[in-house]
Length: 209
Image (cartoon, rainbow, N blue to C red; front, side, top):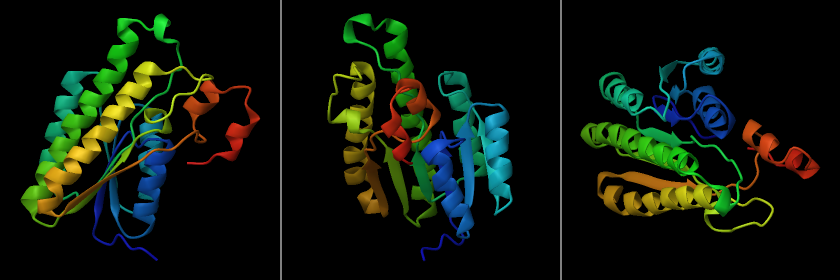
């Protein structure tokens, strides 16, 4: 069985879904976790649940608020420079036709990618300085590679394709520092945004994160 003894994981968007599951797996196997997410009961409950198995901390930040992202960067650098694992799991999915998109819709995805980019930078600085290498997993999407008529999602797909492109670039740039960078591209998972997007689709319940 894989052990994470002595390893610290940072999860961006880890208060629920796949991000929280990753944190639970690491903490249950001897590691610790830092959850970065929007302030509120969901974040508090996630960290409280993790703390029953091992060390866990939270950094409250609305990833759409640049000032809060900058503060989260500072907290990661000051309090968790020893993290050698990172999962970028923040995301949302709102199907909308191309002609119905407004600037605010596009900007919401853009802001999330910007936050992911610079929070990843903060964690990677610690990995490089620590000299122990590390591993990054970016949670992308099947929609980055395949369009579906039932879920028009041009802005979402564009954003997730950018995350996959970032993965390719970082895998090359950071290999010399012993940092592995990979992405996963899940389809529908059992999480709140899937239930909102597919409220009448029974097959979504068969997909799990």
